[in-house]
Length: 123
Length: 234
Image 1 (cartoon, rainbow over the protein chains, first blue to last red):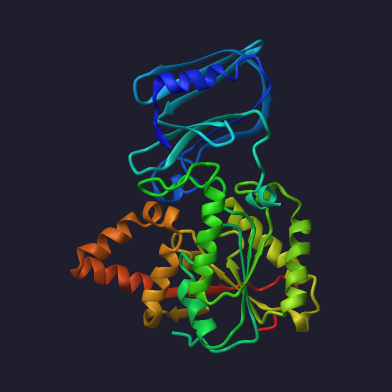
Image 2 (cartoon, chains in turn green, red):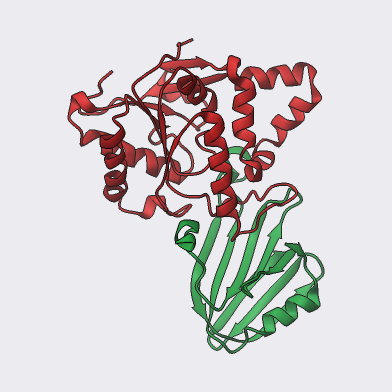
């Protein structure tokens, strides 16, 4: 992944507007947040392959960045995004990494379902 | 300190790549060097790990493939020649039907006939996937006739497990294979630096800090999990 280029990410987001897309949305402070890192509790939420359609998509902020996707009946939102990649399948990966390179938040869009396992993907 | 001697077959049951190496690699190496064949059942590919390497060498989608390769590299160092991937998904193991996971573990047990099964000590694994896999392993072992059951060695992740379990049943001195143990841990390139930043710092610092880390890494501890139907074969 590369540091977010606002114009490139905005263009990539805009390409998904109006279509049915598969969403991976995630945030985590790590399974050992409470055990090893002195935080009150481990917190994580993720959706893999939520099928969504949005009418407006925008990136905002200045490292880290925020992304908002406006749907007919709701919003998709992520904060703390630092890096991006458009992979060889045209999928958009956005992630927020802390200063030790650990993923804290991810928002990803694809026209095809995200694989559920690398083993399945190879098959 | 307990001596590791050749046994019929060693079966390792874990949910994530790196579980087999972090905290246990020395024991596994001692068993395989003594001529024990070893099988590893790995439930997931750690798809949702937050460590991506520092600097990052993976993203959310490439991470499982990278971790699979890391696991294969670690197995090579550990002398584990038989790797079984269950294709479950990170963080979801506890929501699967434990009997179905146990079915798959039971099939492997009946095939390789392990004398020792190493997993996390049930309930003391901290990570929900750890406890889900060790729970499934216990279900699988209980289904076997008592004379065919492997002894279950559990390692604990909780702080101060001796306050819950008493002294460990097996304390293994792995100082003779410390270099290989570190190599197996470091084979998990995407995970090692994030999880063991302080270990790396201490090893680089040398002196007392390095000696202290080597002392900690030089000992591995296990508690025998005694089945509540009194059927462990030990």
